[in-house]
Image (cartoon, rainbow, N blue to C red; front, side, top):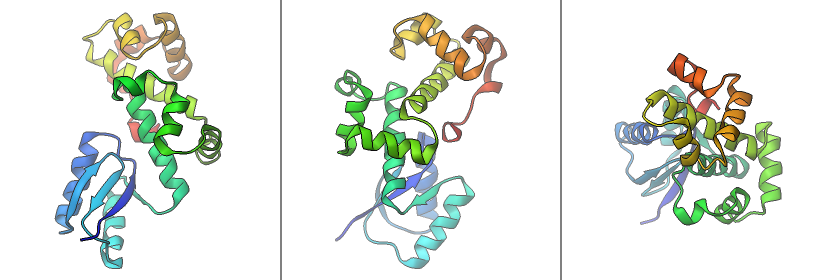
Length: 191
């Protein structure tokens, strides 16, 4: 039995994985596993199946990736999200972001950086900071951690550093953001 992997854009959370699994079940397409941004299938899709999937994915905000550059950008985004949200393993978290990315996708960081900037119109570092700030917003809204604990959990050097980046990205201080709450959060795939 041959297997194939499809790459899917905008899968950023567990609900996304469940949504994609539901689409495949509803279309009666057998699959082995779904992970963030990837669908592992038992066999190749027919043209008709691919067409139906593209339509269903578009309805819920996903996109089938069919070229190498788009696939690489999506993989970089998934790795950055994982790292920014502190979901990478301890060993992965202890190395520089540039080394983590180039080691994970087997490309030089300079190539990844220039490709990402050309396609996305921003740097990998900016994307990483935006993802960390979104995680900080989430933790602030939950209200269970102090700003010091959030800074520590997100591996900021200090509360001042977190506050400075937070204000630069959102235009608000973390304290004020916490007061106004959820209204200022963005969906991860909209960042």
